[in-house]
Image 1 (cartoon, rainbow, N blue to C red):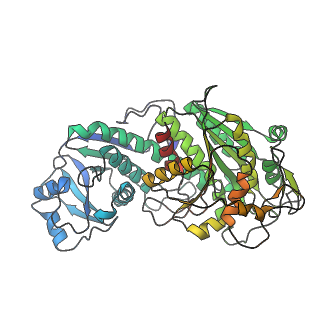
Image 2: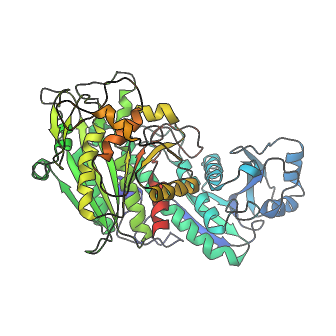
Image 3: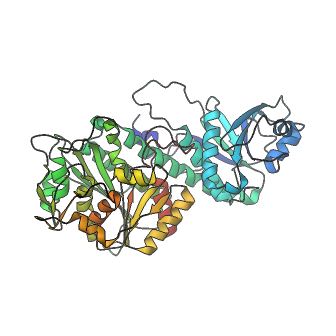
Length: 522
């Protein structure tokens, strides 16, 4: 089964999908139903409880009464402390319709948010993975204070994100049997909002999983031409316009950055263009992704330790593809363009050398002092290409610098922007999705660090390990003439253990953030 089949990009409709997502077969059957949670016949019902609660209220309170106070007894005996993501199983002994009750801790009520809902939903899904069906409330839609749409979206997102595994090359250690999620709500007034939220959560989560699969794929099976093929298939199934530029086309466009980075590999580079809802008078939002499908550092070769993780250097490209998928399936009334600069950075007799001078497609010359600072070279050509759309805004995502990981760890992406309004929109979307960003400066003084004696600029500084993330961003700023934001996602793209909905490997960071941003833009 290929990734498109797995995440539902097909032409036929599936009668099993209660949420009626046009053109999609889901990896899970998700239903939103009105009913009494104490009476529903199911393998298990999932209930969330805050820390410090002695007697549960809402749906948990109704189940507690039906079970003759069994949940209250567990809380009183402190068998279950309700820490975020903690789980506890109860047998119902036929007192209610469900065979089991799965209690999941919501943590502190003061720190409760939609992102907490994603985390606890992921924990619950993993705990229930041996069952065929899990029935749950939309966490937070009652006493949690979230609106029904947000609660349902976060519950579905967390469930799907939490169950993800990349097992293409290994036998599953423990098979996941959970195939159906049911959201139950007693009030008919909330039902429409719950359905809309669940459907949106399903589309966005499966788009994240699509991006995760791409980023987790080894470099051997996802060179630039294969990344381009994935984009073409995605476009064909979703009705997007797609164009892929090969080496000859890149030469005609003068894309010296992409060509220079890719020339050390036997796998030629590609430039990928995806367009959604674009008309002649459109001023789109342009998303740009760094697509280095494997990065050895080139002649400035990286250390051996950890080099295997450089398959994740195309995580920005994966995020752009995932976001384009989500935008198309959500049918957002906004024009969006996705640009991906794809290359493989390897050392060879043909490879780019330190000291070489290359010419970007806007005729600006660059002295290459470090071939491991290659991402900014391919992005430069993509950012120049974006100018032809007269965009409202351009946002690039790139695993650009290890320096950003040193500065922010794995808890936030670095955000650089030349436009205050755009930066604020991204920050709001980050708060809503839990995909954090942290604003970093673009001081003009940083440009001194990339002054070259023989070219217009150079691609890295020789003045020591200072302001590494900002140097990368200030280089990119040389190639924009529109509202622009740069997200350095080096720390958040893979192996982020602080979120319960993140597995080992790729996180798919950026898909949810961009989808939320574009929803609000529309």
